[in-house]
Length: 325
Image 1 (cartoon, rainbow, N blue to C red):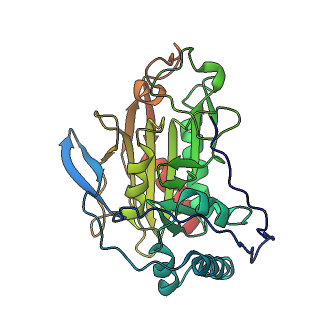
Image 2 (cartoon, helix red, strand yellow; image 1 turned 90 degrees about the horizontal axis):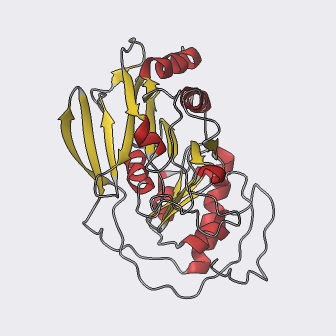
C-alpha cells in the first residue's frame, strides 16, 4: 500500500534559481547519527583487491540542529549558492550536512529544482554533489555503451532517471538498468525488490553506475556503493569511477552484493591516492564479471550471451584522455 502523502497546501514552489519552500513536518523522533565514511576490509583475490565496505558502527557526536523553518531557509539559500556557483562554500556545506533530514522533507526541499538530481540524501544528511563537468558525462556515456552492448535488451531496460530510496538515503545513479517487468517471473523472486510508492510497480535497478570527478571524495563514492546493496534493493552490480583531474589520475572498480545479502564487496586492481593510477599510461586491465551475477537468480541468461560482462578500464581511460588532453 502506498504511503499517504502529507498535505502540502500552503506550500509555495516556484522555478529556479530560487524555489521557495514553506513546508514543515511534524516533530520527528531523534535518530541515530552515523558517520558518512565506511569501513573497508581488504583482501586479495587473484590479481584483484576486494574490499568489503560496511556501514560504520560508531555513531558520531550529535550536532546542534536548526529549527526546521530556519533550516528550510538555509537550504534554499544554499541551493541558490549552488545554482549560481556550481559549488558550495565549506561553511554552507557544513551547515547543510549537519542537519538531520527525513526522506519526506528531503523530497519536498528538492522537488522541482532544476539541479535536483545532483542533491542526495545519505543517512539523513543532504549532500550537494558537483555539477557534471567534462569528462563526467563522457565517461558515463562510455560505460553505458560498454554495458549495453553486452547485456540482453529484451531482459534489461535503462532507468537512469529513477531515484533509489534506500532507508534514510536517496540517490539517483549516473546510469542504471533494471529487469523489465515482462521478464520478472511470477512469483517474483525474493531478491527483486520494487521501488517504494512507484505507481507502475517498477523494480529497483540491477546495475548502477557512479562517476565522480574532482570534488566528490572516495568516502562518499564508497558510502553510496555500500547503501545501494541494502536489503531493500535489487542491485546486483555497481560500477564506480573516480577521476582526479589535477593529478591526472583515476580509479575504476566494481561491486557485488556480499554473501550475507547486504553491503558491497568491492573489487579493484587499482589504488587510491597517493598511488592512484595515471591517466597518461595505457592500462591492460579488464574486469570480467560473471553474467550470473549481473542477471541474478531466476532470470534466464540468453544462450548467445557472453559468460562475463567485460569492463575495459583502458576504454574508460581513452574516453578520459580524449576529453582532457
